[in-house]
Figure 1: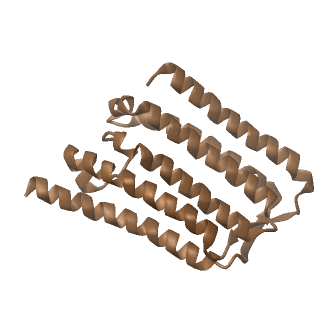
Figure 2: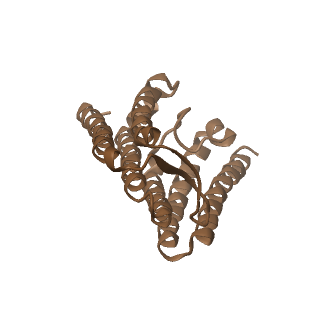
Figure 3: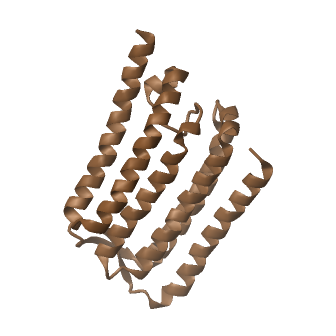
Length: 217
């Protein structure tokens, strides 16, 4: 991976994590003692947690993601594969941390508007899927990143074709999720989006199996 890309990407992620910490410090005095932790499909609050925890969760997750995704290529037996899609891997890392920045802002500013929180989270997930899917075909075989099934891992041809097809599916489910988050009531929107994600996951597993059988008898 280009050293400048790696350096700039890591700097961007650390800045994003710092921004989350600053947001927590600025908003903390105005937050109620308890904030929603989980919402039901109808938008009702199922559970709450202390604001002391709520302001730390997203920055902590962002930091964890930064460290984990930094370490993964170094310990992966196929570490040389990351050089072939290093720029995309860095873009995905940055996008993932930025997703948590958005989540942090939404949950700390819209805690009295659960419908907006749920819809914005689905929109964010949809955008994340589209970013991932747009370049998924570039991903080469690794132990930690990509569509890992017994059949993609066992056959390089299956890996490549499953990722090319899977990329289009991820873009599709991401786009549909964004549209549904904007137009449907919460409950059917949530069920369709979750159902779509599960269908794509199972569908790609089945597709990789069929490819493996085709190539290997």
